[in-house]
Amino acid sequence: MAIQPVLRLGDPRLLKVASEVSDFNNPELDLLIEDMFDTMAAEDGAGLAAPQIGIGLRVVIFGFDDNPRYPDSNAIPKTILINPQITALNEDKEDGWEGCLSVPGMRGMVSRYTSIRYTGFDANGSPIDVIADDFHARVVQHECDHLDGIIYTQRLTDPMKFGFTEELSNSGQLSSASCTE
Ligand code: NI
Image (cartoon, rainbow, N blue to C red; front, side, top):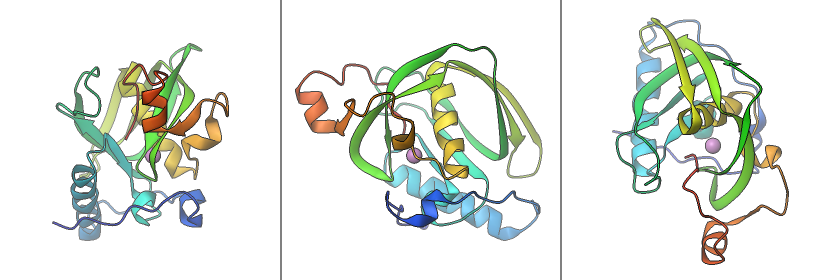
């Protein structure tokens, strides 16, 4: 078990485009995934991307059974997604509050596609092909953005709808539990 420090907004490594995984037999890939799950669990996250722990590879993980931080959200199966591709199934988007382990204690309003198909590979290199909606779709879009060096703060629908979780919550603005990470 190895919990890694999560890079925070301002670290230039978070803004880099990550590289594709080409060797699925490399034992370092399994160690990376283990570290990512340990780190995500320690932080109570709903997802994590490899660049957030300083590894510039196109690997994301997400999923939770029952997360106290997201009481209104259905469980998402624990998933390892490598070299992901996302396609929006239609043009429908929805605004929702997001957070990020790299921007601790804050939330911002972001618009995301509500229905997507994502493809990629699992840790063994077997193909993944999933249709996802709503919160599940939001988490995947948020995580995959990290692989292109994009943090949700670059996608705010309105700079006025961004602030500390505590203040947004105390003032009644943070009504829904539609947050990632
Ligand atoms: Ni994030």
